[in-house]
Image 1 (cartoon, rainbow, N blue to C red):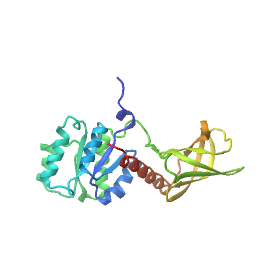
Image 2 (spheres, one colour):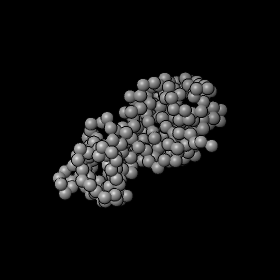
Image 3 (spheres, one colour):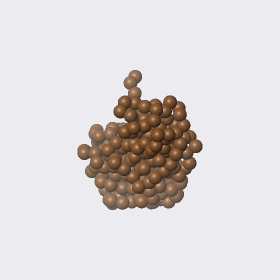
Image 4 (cartoon, rainbow, N blue to C red):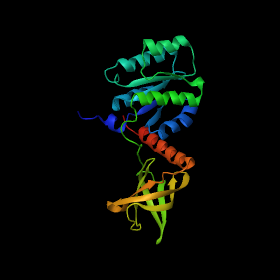
Length: 253
């Protein structure tokens, strides 16, 4: 049986009307864990995205935007519509009312749970990660790859024996980059290349890499050192998060 795209590449995860702490902290953790996650701030656009990307997962913050009754109607509508019913929903809320929780978990039966944000960001994130794992949201891929070929502020330079070589990053993941250089040394595959400078919009980060090979048009593939520290990883993942979100925000639907 042929595998679906989501089985191979993972499911898109949307968070509708996120609290600021979710947008700033939880999303970092989700991206670093390999889940392709986005924020959405418009209810109608969220519906269009679910239609555009069948099988997606969406967590809805029911504390903002609508009354309890309006949110109930919206969520029931998503789960019952032929266009979106293959999506899976979860609830985010600071409200700990047991009747409200029972309504969403038992009556409406949202498959991704009711996450109580009052438990704190760490526990809330742990519960969300468990729900995403249970729904196989990561797919079979190991890393999220973000295309940034159109971003003039995603560049790289390498200090080699012949001087400094400047390149344009075409795509980036937690494992490494592909970049096009005007000129670059002829490294053998698996050659360590140290102190490679990445410029990811406003952030500069020095990383150690391994040269994996060169494709046409001087496109080189560099893998990050496995010992890359957490600070470096966070810069890379936040750029991935920014690039993915920008691409989704610019998507015409």
